[in-house]
Amino acid sequence: MQVITTHINADFDAMASMIAAKKLYPEAVLVFPGSQEQTLREFFVKSTVYLYDFKRIRDLDLHQVTHLILVDTRQASRIGRFQEIVGRPDLEIHIYDHHPDAADDVHGHKEVIKPVGATVTVLASIIAERGLELTSEEATVLALGLFEDTGSFTFYCHQPE
Image 1 (cartoon, one colour):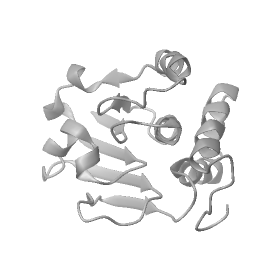
Image 2: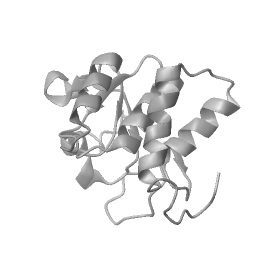
Image 3: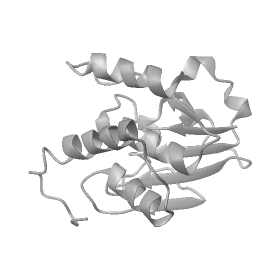
């Protein structure tokens, strides 16, 4: 089973990156590793979770995971129970991230890490390169992830895209 996940206390970039990764891995299951940020966004997040059929980690048999796709993080300490399986030799790991290196980084078979303002930028570029289409709902969520993680486009970004 392919699983797409992100970091605990997921924000809009994390959630948007999961949805973007689903375009690249259409057979994958979307699973939050733990809680999401508790803010006024709760209604929107719950609506999106329903729309995109996110699963909870407690409903998942970790032994069935054959591919783990990490987005918006690669730190083992931030992926909840998924850190229990990252050392399995039979597990294929793909990583899409924009954060700098950290001591407890997971290493993947495929790593796409770029110094941009949001991970969703990395994934949106791949989606565009492959000529994949987004629905208006997907495009809206991706835009929200980018908008939030760049501080409404005011934060310094390592590389404009």
